[in-house]
Structure formats: structure tokens, C-alpha cells
Amino acid sequence: MIAAVRELDRIDLGLPMSDRTALRLTADEHLQRAFVYLFDRDLTTARSHFNAIVTEHPASGHVPESLFQIGRCFTQESNFPEAIRSFERLQEQYPEHPAARKALLQGASAYSRVGKHRESVRRYQEYIARFPSEPDVDRAYLYIVAVLRDAGEETEALKWTATISETFPGTVTDAQGAFAAARIHIARN
Image (tube, rainbow, N blue to C red):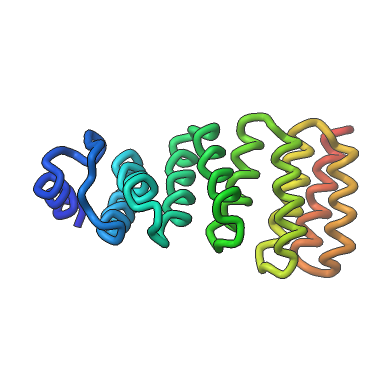
């Protein structure tokens, strides 16, 4: 599959996608090719196709998902500052799009990776406030504990473990919060 897409890029565009600036494909075609490259872990070329959607087809309904995927590509390359830019752009331009929900979590994680712990916690808190019924909201609570612990703010992290216990009593998330609290207490001693 990847060989076929590379050959299509060569035929349609004349150069490898990563070397192109002027693109002539439809947004749908870019999206299909981008996902093939993404599956093959050719992040640079996948990102080029996603970027083409954003720049050459701004009215396309694929722009929010493309911005999210651009951020994911940067995350997989450990280029967290660029990932943050893409996730933040998606949040600003398309706050109600389903991809914005995912970008909020991914952005929070990226902020923690660059040492901006307060920004990370703020994004997780925003996720909790905006999406309290989402099935993965418990993850945001647990990530807050991890970010605060990693930032050396154990007291604040312990407060969040108590919040987890109150919010998710008797669940696996409650047990994970208790385990996180135990780890903090053990590390302190």
C-alpha cells in the first residue's frame, strides 16, 4: 500500500511529498494518503499531506482532524513545542469539533513534556470541566496527579488523589488514585 501511495505522489506531484510546496490534490486525496503514510510511520510525509489540507483546502471539513494529526506527528517525533502549537490552533479555531476534545488532552500531555506543569494541569482541568461525562475523563484526573507529582508538588497531588476517591468511589480509578497516593507517601519517606 505504501509503495502505491509513494508512486501516486511521484506521478501526481512529481517530487516526494516532503519536497513539495505547491500541491494539486483534493483534500480527500491528501487525507487518504496522509493516513497511509501515518500508518507506515512516515511522519514527515504524512504531516506534509495534512499541512496541504490546512493550507490549500482551508474550507475543507478535514482541517480540524488534520491539525490534530499534525500535532500527533510532532508528538511522535518528540517535538512537543510544535505539537502544542498545532493542538492550541485547533482549540482556538475549532473549539466545538470532536478533534478539539482529543487535542485538549494531547496538548496537556505535551505541556508536561516541556516542563510547563501549570499549563498542563490547567488543560486537564479544562477537560474535566468541559467533558465531565466522557468515558476517559478519569484519565485526566490521574494525569493531573502524575504531573503534579513530577513537578514536586506532592501535597497538591495528594489533594487530587482525594478528589479522585470522592469522584470515582469503588472504581478502578479510585484504586489507581489510592495507589498514586501510596507511591507519593513512600517516596516522601
